[in-house]
Length: 366
Image (cartoon, rainbow, N blue to C red; front, side, top):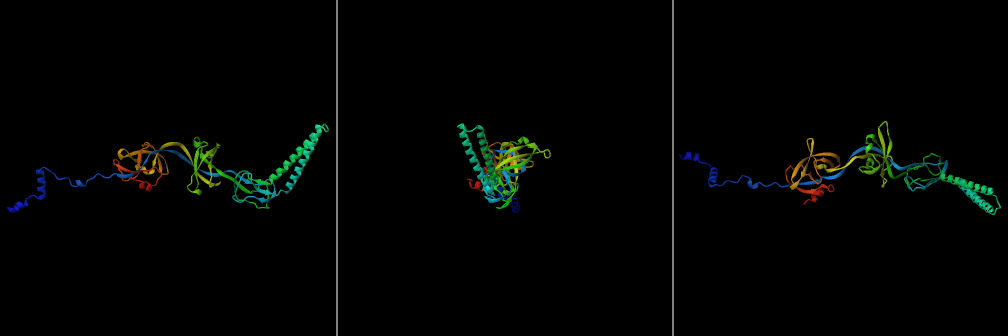
């Protein structure tokens, strides 16, 4: 009998539970003391701001100097002196080449003497005519002689000028092709002269873009020769004709060149803006791909996160245009998107305005 009772005796845990029910209290839920509210997730956000956007049209163009000339001689003569070196910068009107001109200088002295003598004869006869001691016809002859002497002197001076080669404008000299003592003929290339203070950029665009082209439109250009540098300029002129074969129109832009880094002949990649507008922009890091849709995590009232579908437009490095789905000033999560879920409350560490690196943003966080 003792054995039978021991077999059916309830375990101590059952007795405790039953006793608890009888006494009117219950045990706390298992693990209730360890349950706590999850901490707010730290994130970095950025504000949606209005920025300038455009749809660029790309083209290839070739640089030319603002002014460019091949220096040549007007007469056949030997070079007596050179006043420039390769790559030298010269001022407008500066003498670059002197050619042999001994005969012309002698003729110049003779011409000046003839003019002086003709002036004396004219003045003498003029005084006699005033005194009625000479006729008017004689005075006319002396005036004719004076005019002829002066004209002959101008011709001699012009011949002397032909033997001096001067810079027609300020610029940089290229490589010279002659030496002192060389015989130069008309058409022989002495050197090149380029005004590279500004550069002309000529490129072609399809004629369908004609409505978007106008003088003064700002363009951007770059070349592989100068790395990632971007040069800004403006359209100066548009050709009056469209090529009937290619259906393209030639466009000329002017690029400032204060550092003289751009050289004639460089191939440039040109971007011409179309449809300029002001649109909302957010960092590309805030954009989430959900199938075919684009979504962002918006930090709203009480720092609670909301997932929202947006429609994007143009892109540029680090930025994306948002056409619908956001309003100016709303904050979107840029760092921490992989851990945040819609409906969660987050803690904003910093606001990314694009001027600081991630490390600087984290260092400035409270």
